[in-house]
Length: 207
Image (cartoon, rainbow, N blue to C red; front, top):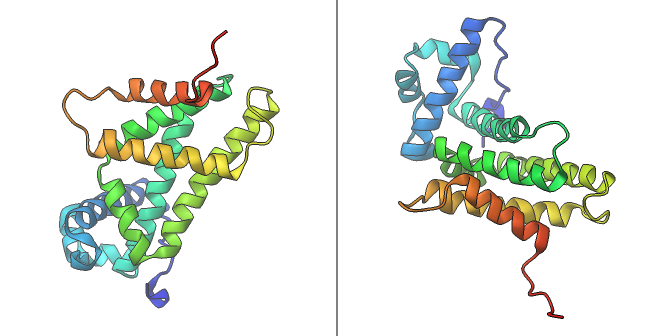
């Protein structure tokens, strides 16, 4: 990605500006998801957003810049969905169930997520890596909190956090992006995954 045109997006100071920025990001998500980065265009993004071409350059310098901002925005929204699903005093294992269910619902409502994040691996590898490393750190921190509360094993760390993230990503792919008629709902999927976390998958010895 051309670093000369990758300035950070300007932070709007008014409600109108924030709404315009949201329109641009949402329009960019549809454009990139449908056409891919290379075939997408700034003019198409502004048409989808219903704003003037000049307005785009108030916030972003280039197509590269809004793509990078979109990846960051989606990563933040995934994190926000998980945080909003967690209630104060919730048990550590239940926290993971709630976070997964929230992610499944978010992915189902924002199907462009996977297409855009996957494309970031080639368009902007730094954003792609940062997306997953940020989520990994969020999960690792939740594991630390659970361990401090005595609910989780104290040695849990980055490997377990990334294993959990991998499970969540592929459950989202199968049950949110590739959803089929008759599939369990997000609540049931999250409960099944949570049961596996809590009890494991090895058969227990009898007697």
